Amino acid sequence: MNQNKKPQALYVHVPFCRSICFYCDFCHRFYQEKEADAWLQALQKEILHYFVNPELRTVYIGGGTPTALSAAQLDSLLRLLDPYTKNVREYTIEINPETLDENKASILAEHGISRASIGLQTADDKLLRKIGRHHTSADVAEAVRLLKDHGIDNISLDLMYSLPDQNMASLRESIRFALSLQPKHLSLYSLTVEENTVFGRKGITPLDEDTEADMYEEICRILPQAGYRQYEISNFALPGYESLHNLVYWHYEDFYGLSAGASGMEDHCRYDKPSNLSEYLNDPLKRDVIPLSKEDEMFETVMMGLRLKDGIFLQDFQNRFGMSFSQAFGAPAEKLLDEGKLQITDGKLKCADAYYHLLNSVLSDLLPV
Ligand code: SF4
Image 1 (tube, protein in one colour):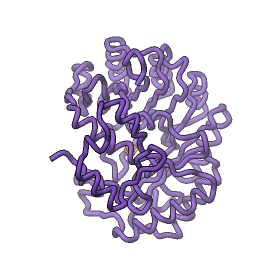
Image 2 (tube, protein in one colour):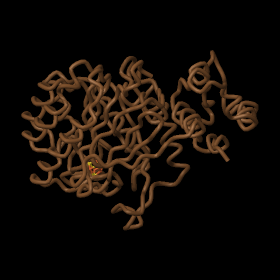
Image 3 (cartoon, helix red, strand yellow):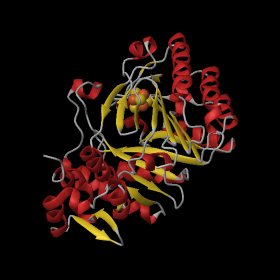
Image 4 (tube, protein in one colour):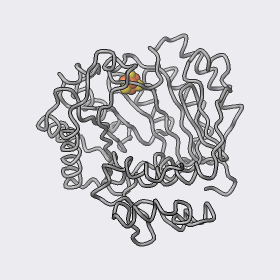
């Protein structure tokens, strides 16, 4: 934690999309120019009200689709953030390939964006249409080219697996295609279907659990062979390109969350901004604040930290909470260590490799009763 206790990470949520993916449960609305203008004004009010540590280390603009904004609006958004991004070590924006063009790539570069996270999802264009994506794999290659031409070469690609009709050959081809674009980082997520999505309403389901587990195993086999270290359950990076911003979440450090649909964590409280855009526009300062007890924080520190391959430094846990991991979690922790599901190596608590993909069930044994 930083000395002045102010968060060093900022997340800004852009709640607009140009189209809606069939599996999507995020906070988004169809882009409308006037509404996006009103949103920028609301965000300005929010930024000026709270603000915000000028010594931020990481800024992450997510969504939604940040690049769904017009070029002028994207420029306005980045201008609002300029005073806080001069010294950041990592400045990320999420991109949907069909919403990026030469002009927008140049605006991103002018404002110092250093990292782009692009939704590829799959290299199978038929499957992309089936999941409601409005780009092709060639569009992704073009977006990567545009960004690199403008000096943004720290690129992360998102891929999905366990998609309807996807098979192992299709997954391998998607990984091969992704690697051909030479990203620095890859995030791989299995499809989950929530009720309030197009897939949920149509009764579409992911592949069966065994196939999903086989696909995960294949991902974890192929990517390290290509030089990408798995540093988190769903994330792989070339050495030195782990996401600094996401590490803030996994290290359970405080972060600011701005705009409709964002969450933040500050000073032993978590807060959620309204997910409804109209509610946010009416009152950009509105937050639902949830105080976190010491027990909440200890559990969540372990829950987030064990997602990392490197696990948790036990001394850090002790320094933060004034008690050891064993004192905090007692007999259930000892049982998990005895069973070999958790391991302590070199002062770090980790989930054993064989149980890594079952982390949630391991963690459920530590839940406060
Ligand atoms: S997945 Fe991303 S781009 Fe697709 S609808 Fe959801 S927020 Fe928008």
